[in-house]
Image 1 (cartoon, rainbow, N blue to C red):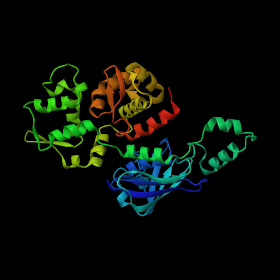
Image 2: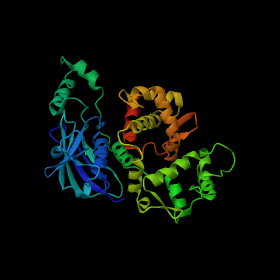
Image 3: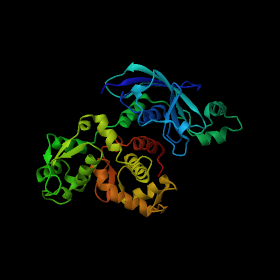
Image 4: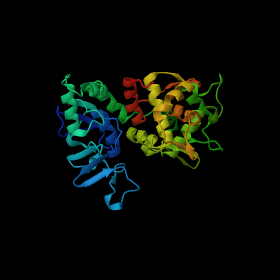
Length: 369
C-alpha cells in the first residue's frame, strides 16, 4: 500500500511533541482523526475538528445552525486537503496541531519518527500542562502529592508501539471475509432459497471448523451461523452483489481499504451495540479468554450509564443478551473466537474496529478489572 507522509506538530507544547506518520492517501478525515489519536497518544474522549483555508470539518451536529455546521469529515478526503491544515482536539483544553503533508510515504502505514510524550487528558491545556510539569519537577511543591497521584506515571513516546497502533488502526481484511470473497470470485449461483450452495458451505467449513459444532459435514448455510450472517453482511455493506441468481464480489471487494471501511459500517457509529462490541472485544484482546458471565461483569462498569434499550436504561442482562445475539456476527468477522461459553478475542480484534484497537492498548496498560 502506497502511503502519504504527514508531519504533526502540537502547538505551543514543551517539550515539543512531533509525529511523522505514513497513512493511506485515500483516508477520510474521520479515519485520519482515528489515526492522529493513536499517533499522538490521545484517548478520543473529547470533540475534535479539522480546519483548512477557513473551512471546518467535523462530525455534523443536528442541533447546530446550518451556517455553523462543519463539513462532514466522513465525506472529506485527505487528498483534498492543502499542504498544511489544523487539527483541534478537546474544545475545552484546546489542543492545536499543525498537520503538514510532506509527500509520498513508505509502502505501508506506520510511524516513521517522533518525539515528545502526549500531555495527559484534562490537564488544562497548554498552561495546565506547563503547571503540571513544573509541580512534578519539584517534590517540595505544595501540590506535588495531589498532582502526582492524579497524573500517575506520565507516558513516554514509543515509536514502535505507535507504529503498530497506526497499522492496526488502518486495519486488515478479516481472514474469514477473504475466504468467502475468494470462493465467490467468478460468481456463485445461489440455491432456490437464496442461500449459498453446499459446495461453498463445505469449503468454508474446511477452514472454519469451529463454526459448526457437530462432527459431520455441513449441508446448508444455516449449519454455520457465522457464515449465514457473513453472507448477509457482505451484501448489506456492498461487498457482494446478487444478479440473476448469481452472487459475486463487487469492485469494492478488490480494494482492502474499501473492504475494511465497509465492514466497519456494519456497526452503527456511536450506537449502543457498537460501543458494547468495542468494549467487549477490547477487553478480550487485553485480558485473554473469559467466560461469558465474567466478560459481562467486566463490561458493565466500562459501559457506564446512559445507554437505553427498548426505551429503558440498559442492564447487565441487556449487555449479555445483546452480546449473545451478536456473537455469530462477531465470529463471522473474526472479532470473536473460542468456545461458545468461554470467549476470546479473534484475530481481527485489534485490526477491524479502530476504537477497540485503541481501547485494547489502554486496557492492557491500565488493567481496569
